[in-house]
Image (cartoon, rainbow, N blue to C red; front, side, top):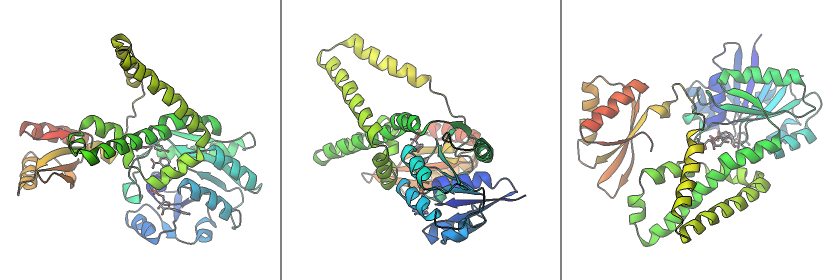
Length: 366
Ligand SMILES: NC(=O)c1ccc[n+]([C@@H]2O[C@H](COP(=O)([O-])OP(=O)(O)OC[C@H]3O[C@@H](n4cnc5c(N)ncnc54)[C@H](O)[C@@H]3O)[C@@H](O)[C@H]2O)c1
Ligand SMILES: O=C(O)C(=O)C[C@]1(C(=O)O)C=C[C@@H](O)C=C1
């Protein structure tokens, strides 16, 4: 029997879930978005079977409704869903980056015949929109579900079994515990990355060497500062209490380091870095499959006519397959950053070696 899934908000996350679920031929995906252009793109990319800007049409036949809009819009969507005609036994879930507020809100409003189960796939990107969606975005990531004591077990199992098509590890957590943990490993790092970028930007106003010299380290730690500002505005406002506590702990931790520098305490400064390194090295690695960004290579190119042609000729001559090539930015009119997307890991490695051999400075990360 066919299962109909309604995806409410067909962007990066909604689109990625849709792509993963539609691999099962028994699944039919109907998308709803407030923007017709997002639906058009999703239909062109083969993400949806059907798309509509009418919420009632999207959810009428749905057995599972996945709300994948920005957090504030999740609340509004839940309100609207309570007024619409839904299938008996329907499961509604969301993908919001915060959980306590949303789960409480749903519990207070959803009628008995509807099961709401909070959800949060712990993978994503600083990119937005369905064009960045991938069927393997969640592969080997954790997908957190936050059922409550009242949630029927067979409904949780039904949803977990459906979501296993994303190849994520579906786990269960209490919503408040989720918000504390994710606050420290995801939300707070986004604050730090953006605060650091803003600090350097303010220095850069007086001395433009700051952005010119910003190299690998700065780029690595600030990638997530390129994320969608609206999304993160909602996340911070929704995880206020945990974030305020984490910010307090952070201030104390930073003050500790400042003291060590003031006291010129070489041993403890080294210990500080060693402790961080040990924990960082122990983090589980996500072994993903063909997620396209894994095959991206970035290289600085001189702004000479014919330079890109030379690079593609070198790559083509060695029969290395590329799927995309893009000029990312131009620095100081002398250097540009070229992103080359290779078809496979093997192609990427061969391309990297070749370009390095010909004297190009190549990076795996932007
Ligand atoms: N980006 C990430 O890394 C990430 C990871 C996990 C979870 N999330 C969560 O997923 C959700 C979506 O994030 P995203 O990165 O996919 O954003 P996105 O901007 O790529 O997509 C959001 C989509 O929702 C649509 N939308 C906006 N308001 C809507 C409404 N009222 N009803 C229906 N659709 C609406 C937008 O038009 C857009 O197509 C957010 O709640 C976010 O917290 C994001
Ligand atoms: O990879 C990124 O760019 C992300 O920020 C993904 C990330 C994260 O912080 O890890 C961001 C928000 C989510 O809710 C889940 C995952």
